[in-house]
Amino acid sequence: MFRNGTMYHCPSGNYCPQRAQRPWECPAGTYSEVGQLPAFMDECDQCPEHFFCLRGTPDRFEYICDQRGEGGVYCPPGSSQPRLCEEGYWCRPNSAAPLSVADYEHVDTTGNPKLREEYRIIRELCPEGFYCPQGTREPIACRSELGQICRRGSIAPTYRTADRESCPPG
Image (tube, rainbow, N blue to C red):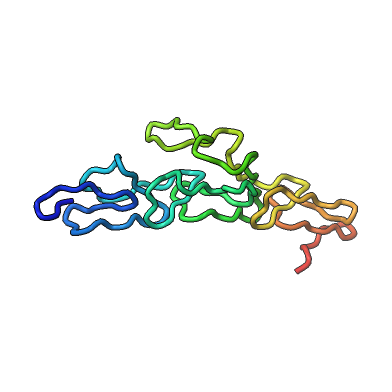
């Protein structure tokens, strides 16, 4: 970016199109870091998996998806906020919390972080015998003694009546 004939580096959390008079803030779901930026940068980088990036995020490690280790949320690449685990799925909480940047390994060629295996947020289809409403941290067991039946991916139990299954109440 040039100003009065002098070249400046684009500040972190921003991008600087070639003809821009001022930096533009990175949109939510993206970031830019100091030291990686050329004077001209036409776009910000996508926020990596297990992290989310608010508007103007200057560091890809700034916002860890499940910081409190409670589960029920996940962050795919490009997230602008944690997402609730969808119905029929469960999102295992981190096994240790709070997390820090030290819990991540740099393993891919782009320098994107990879969370160590024991800390990864796992998003899985709800197993048979359990149900998983939106935001589920742990699958909820069906109660067969009450006539509940839960197939894989269930969002609520169904109920056995006589010789057939019925829809859940509501």
